[in-house]
Image (cartoon, rainbow, N blue to C red; front, side):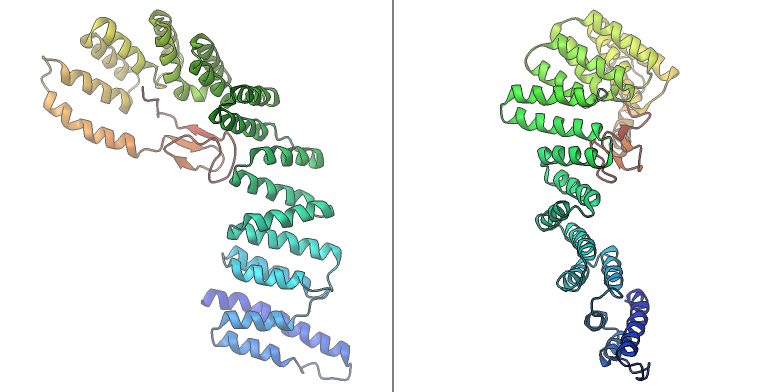
Length: 389
């Protein structure tokens, strides 16, 4: 409350000054101190810690003209930034209702009111205002940017594509990455609705718009695997790793699954050994240990994991090593190792595996769009957080 009162004091001072200035204009012989009684009523509310009534009084006193429009806008922005959206809406609505506004002033007030509505979650009202601004050709770029935010929140991906095209044409912005993700989203919608050809077409457009769209390649691989074309799925997944090495832990389990569907375990093991050498800690060691257990037994697998732990220790490798050793009959520390298992599980579960490279947002699961800064393809698996196979 005290902070709000302090913020309103400059508004009260400006209101008094403007009122006095208007009085002088109307009657040069009048005393400058003859200020409107509304001003004193507002001050009285302010001193009695009644900010709502004080705001009403000051807004009532400030007739909208070229001298006071900026004051109204500043006051509305102040309340929106403070999270008091209803007050901001009331001020900006009052401003728009006044006939004295110029065309540009009204457009600025519409933009501010649209942002108030967005902050309040009234996206349909905000959308209407931003569309109106776009038609008036005033403040078009911020209006389009806000429309893009609204359509992303509403998951209207086709509308997102249309707005992105308009932004590119207007400002020369390069939005290929965002547009490729919009096509990926549309592909998922089409796939869920049984429109496989449309889904494939959207993924091709995504790759055509942005060659580096690893998500599109990943989805193409998943679609291929679903149709039984495991060789094509492997090719696309490996291509994804070549495009963006940091996504290896995301696609490695699928690479292993597709090789297993083909029954080509020898080629799989060779590939995993290459990956383990080039990218230690990315999860290939666990997959190799599983193959060794199947082909050579648990003792050989446990020995392999011990070698890997000595070279590049990780919690996941340690946990898998404990599981293997605990099942061996000659393990002398089975009880101790079993006691460690829940603690290691807890450490792994509590540790965020992903982080946004833009804003540092941490998450336990992969988001293609950062919930914090809204960047696309900015979230990466953190170093040392390998895939679980």
